[in-house]
Image (cartoon, rainbow, N blue to C red; front, side, top):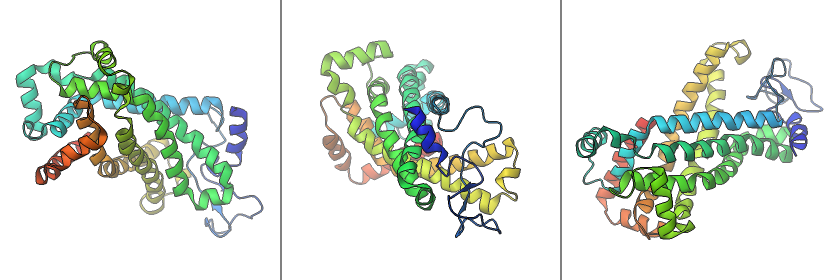
Amino acid sequence: MFSSFRELAKCNPFFSPFQAQCEGRAPAKDGALVPTRNLGAAAASDEGDSCEFGSAKYYALCGFGGILSCGLTHTAIVPLDLVKCRIQVDPGKYKNLIHGLRLTFTEEGGRALAKGWAPTFIGYSLQGLGKFGFYEVFKVFYGGLLGEEYCYTYRTSLYLAASASAEFFADILLAPWEATKVRIQTMPGFANTLREGLPKIYNAEGINGLYKGLPPLWMRQIPYTMMKFACFERTVEALYKHVVPKPRADCNKAEQLVVTFVAGYIAGVFCAIVSHPADSVVSKLNNDKGSTAMQAAKDLGMKGESFFLMLYKSYLQQVQEV
């Protein structure tokens, strides 16, 4: 299977980071991308690669990078995530970030701020594995279907399609752990640990209790991931074109890392805007036993102005998490 993906990858404009020329066209003398189509794309170069682009090792490393980037970072901000979820579920009690942190510390002690760390770490590590690993797989696969020239011309659509496909499967891995995390964080007395919470949900509601939040999770995460990857890829292009004073080929690793960080932060802010309404539904749904996605949305929507105020407060919290 990976040998076929490797062959597709070699015909893909993302195979080379700086010059991926379309077959049958001469490179432009002035270095322009069109009409002679001397393509610039973000990928590993041929020289000095730690692994071959499109190989099993390449996809494994992408997946491992996803584990680190999602699992560790989400676990590190568990206190912020806990307060965000509580604001979404009970905005009358938890006014804002600082108030929520103080109230939680006063009522439950410092250890309460780490509630849900285990399902967060496991769930988002698995999600990162699927998100970043499958994104590269689908990007190469869809690029092979489109052909080299169309792959570049419609690259934004390619990013959107590949990221949506990857997130669809990543959320299936995340859903049970997200359901457990939300209940531990927002239902006092329900459970304090993963070992206690996960079996409790399964015994009371079966497999449906663990996956009933999957549809709104898709509603939250698929637009989020589509915005993340498409915005990130195009922001990187824009930064090298309009901001960085020299070509990417002349930038050292530290300079490229700064560009990557800036592009990632910009993409993260836009991600929060796109995904936030569904994020509120996920928290409300997993907090209410026996509730459905439509019922959770109605319960939030019935609050009128307070609903939008709650969205605004917890959205600011979500941006702070970025």
